[in-house]
Length: 194
Ligand code: UDP
Image 1 (cartoon, helix red, strand yellow):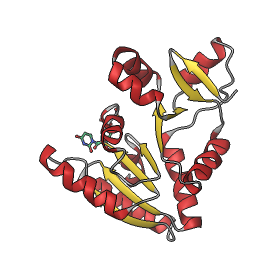
Image 2 (image 1 turned 60 degrees about the vertical axis):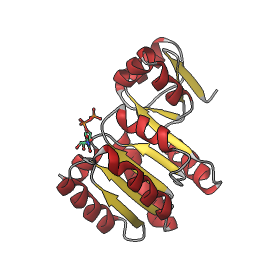
Image 3 (image 1 turned 30 degrees about the vertical axis):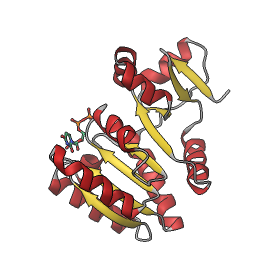
């Protein structure tokens, strides 16, 4: 069985490597995928917020946090390892490097996102970073940002606006974004830039 259910949230039971390969296949097969890296806090938000639960139910949810691994163990479900956002981002950047995918980076403070972009393009020189934008925009700028991403048609869209807002944001614009894979990455750009 490839799905485990923890407090009504459906998680993939694939391990890290398998998850990376599966997501890669989905991208290559043109299946639009929203990855949510869910820790126990996100599971609680999904329990309390019906709109957010429906977003999570339609997403590809990976176990980000040892608390999820334990919860699976207690309920006899086969989740054996964590899949964290920052590790998944790096692994997908390696795939982007290999396949020359386009990548759009959205979120974090202006200096952080520019540093993260420079570090990622140095490490993955064949990945095409087709756009980059900080996460402190005004609501009236959103349409233009969505349009910019849509025109860039990235294979990968990484969004750091804090959870759960980043996932609400991607779900809202999912149909317009023209990204094969979109994933909320929380504080990952801060980690990468540091
Ligand atoms: N962030 C942003 N815009 C905002 C709020 C947060 O770009 O309006 C960024 C913040 O700079 C950080 C990332 O979102 O890079 C994650 O934020 P935080 O650590 O607060 O969220 P969490 O760890 O809970 O996901």
